[in-house]
Amino acid sequence: MAGKLLYEGKAKKIFETEHPYEVEVYFKDDATAFNGAKKGQIDSKGVLNNAISSMFFELLEANGVKSHFIKKIDERVMLVKKLKIIQIEVVVRNIAAGSLSQRIGWTEGKLLPCPVVEFYYKDDDLGDPLINDYHVAAMGLATPEELAFLAKESLKVNEILKAHLLGRKVKLVDFKLEYGKSDQEILLGDEISPDTCRFWDSETNLKLDKDRFRRDLGGVEEAYQEIYDRLKG
Ligand code: UDP
Image 1 (cartoon, helix red, strand yellow):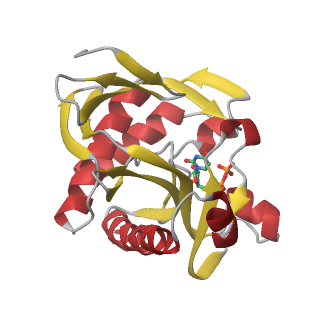
Image 2: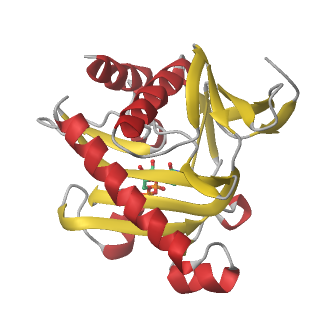
């Protein structure tokens, strides 16, 4: 790796580079779920998530969505712009699943009449609670204009990814995005992978994402590989 370890998260490590405004992201095979309560390893996950995220960031860039992505350096390492992360996780949903199904009582698989955007406060100790725009204002996490941008940009990401994935016979059920600031500009950050999205086969609804790990469904690595293969074409 280039420089010293700046931060180690559940799935990634961040290293400094010679350039103060760039960092290297190293993708690990470690897997966690339920806010770290369930731990495991998924063979090759780091390699696949780096490759999948890189493809998505390139696709988004080509469609006018700016992100921290600079380039994929090797199998497990991505070079990105250093961001000051905004402590809000933006979730976009097209189909009911996971915590939405539990909270609203909608059956998993119900097609939503319109995409739903949710905000969560990024705080592991609190278990990333659901928040709304009033909480964001009171907590000073973002200005109303910034929050409106996060919602609009995330819906744009949804349209781009949804169409691209459907062409590869994958339904985009829901996903989580994180953003950060680089020199006052808000850029999309983190990763976009089967760890952070729900992907279902468009014909069989077979789960091709981290729910296979969360719910002990087996075939976890194969699912990540399948997403990679379909994106690669
Ligand atoms: N998600 C994520 N990180 C989190 C929470 C959720 O990447 O800390 C993703 C998750 O993979 C799914 C979407 O956000 O694609 C919605 O997750 P949900 O709120 O249903 O929570 P979950 O059921 O995963 O606990």
